[in-house]
Image 1 (cartoon, helix red, strand yellow):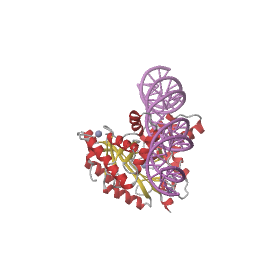
Image 2 (cartoon, protein in one colour):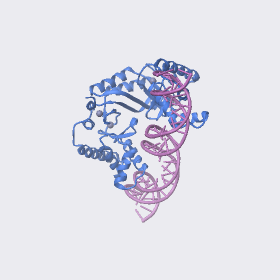
Image 3 (cartoon, each protein chain N blue to C red):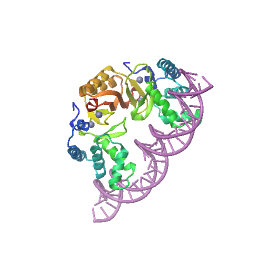
Image 4 (cartoon, helix red, strand yellow):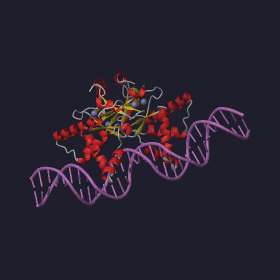
Length: 163
Length: 163
DNA sequence: TTTAATTTTGTTATGTTATAACATTTACAA
DNA sequence: TTGTAAATGTTATAACATAACAAAATTAAA
Ligand SMILES: [Zn+2]
Ligand SMILES: [Zn+2]
Ligand SMILES: [Zn+2]
Ligand SMILES: [Zn+2]
């Protein structure tokens, strides 16, 4: 977890077989839910798939309109319930500054990522860094603040858009 | 900028003369705007005051309803324009995970804070840490990502609510 | 000091994101 | 198979934010 993970990196540049990313993610999600004794229902699985199929963070209402196209009229709670489930299970992340969601490529381990969001091409890469994690933890500990959840998002230009 | 600043700390605990905090912040804002050649109009100043008067991050529509109470019917753009101005000038910060705003107590220097948000009492403290800043900067630099804006928010329990 | 340009504010309407509340169906186990 | 819990459907509404254009106020120029 020390660099851009391959999937996220590919979002902003070279070609890759993204279908493969999606199926891999869905398979892993399926296994994970079984091992946890929770139900990855068809609706939830389809929402996860739609999030993964998007090459950018996707909003709840974009998911909704895709669902409506394929399954007829669908209402917001359907989507939000699925997204909530996926968030709880760590299968997706929410990007607060975009009100949007991205798939997580290592849902098995609990973690807080750093999201690099390109203001030009719109891609969002999830990266991890132990030094950052440690620095934040030490600060909150020192202050007597009991941290439970963290969001770290950086807006700027990705390598592809800087050139 | 190494610890909880006094103002923020006081939000979650002991009593303090918050009126004093507000007037200090308003005075500093006034000076800063003059020195920058931008106009802190009555409307903008009043919104800044309302944000400061709140002991918690305050939402745009809460500001709106206070304005409406005192000045008669007011529309959302009035508030959002003022908030946008204040954000541009660094006089307030936006907490993305709450869709809410807090006053900044050192608007003269450009900076990115770490916001500690108590899920129990709702207070939000802005703190700063050079180690964190450096760790994030190094990571983005290494990845060739040109960072422009950073959002770092931690949810949990503040010292007062932990006890 | 009138005029012109620019900035700020007013106003109406609408777009976007998210949840409450309650009914129905489905899955699963006793 | 029947009771229970979980998941989904449905309707309505809440909460957050901006587009577009008109009017007023400020500033700069003539
Ligand atoms: Zn992740
Ligand atoms: Zn880019
Ligand atoms: Zn600040
Ligand atoms: Zn607290």
